[in-house]
Image (cartoon, rainbow, N blue to C red; front, top):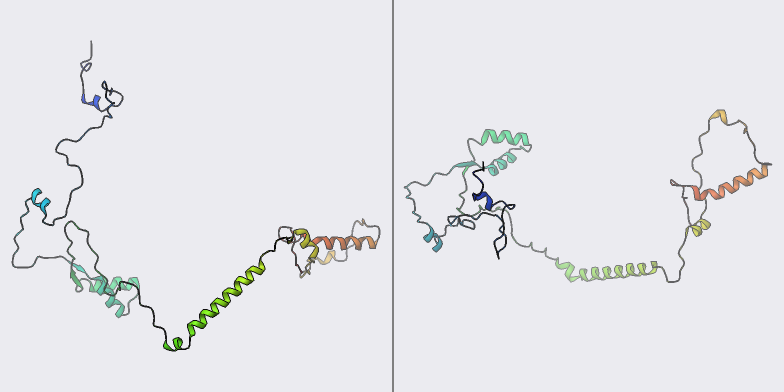
Amino acid sequence: MSSPRVGVVRDSMLTNPLLIKASLGQTRSRGLSVPGPEFTFGTSNLLRDGGVSEVLSSWRVQSGRGHSAPHQPLITDFVSLNRDAVKSGLVTAKELSQYRAQKGEDSSKIPAPKQQEGRASRRPAVPDITFGVTTRVLSPLSDLLSHEYAHRWMDEQLSRNQTSNHKKLQRIKPGCIPDTRTSLLRRSKALPITQTPVKLPRFIHAAPALDTFRDQEARLQAVRAHHSDSVSRRGVQGLGTYSVD
């Protein structure tokens, strides 16, 4: 028995990319649905300026107003509350919150700002702000008559020239051989030992258990060689600490 769905063209066949086949001489469809004729592309314009587009698209009737002004909700004026709290000597957050709870409900109520339809609300301008560039402080007349600025400019130029000359002297001349680790070792000398190693009292007078030197002269010679060669083994990383003359 055959299925009743065999040979029936369904709407799902037009959206499934695995079932869509290209027509002769045409590209294969993507299977995307297109909105109907009632769909309007673009964004809606909320600007109501009384232009031609508003007249053609809608019929706006001005609502009748009574003799009384429209009622606007009242909001708390936190600026005046904070100003009065500071004048009263309250500066901490806890004191300000308590002051607002006591005085905020009784006074300091202002009407809420009215927002224009279709436009972003503008923030109220700060009364103590000044737009533009601040004016430069006037120069004292005594400094102008005594040529103080000219002398200051001359001093800056002289100091700049001295700095440039000092940098030129510090540059390595061509043909000069730079110092290496070997040359630094030749001119270095061992630093004096400031701290003596800690010795336990029971080991101060103890004799050595093994003596590998032939005589006392050989021992002193080995100690002097070890002391002269210890310069390159000092420091935290064992690379040596040098004091160049």
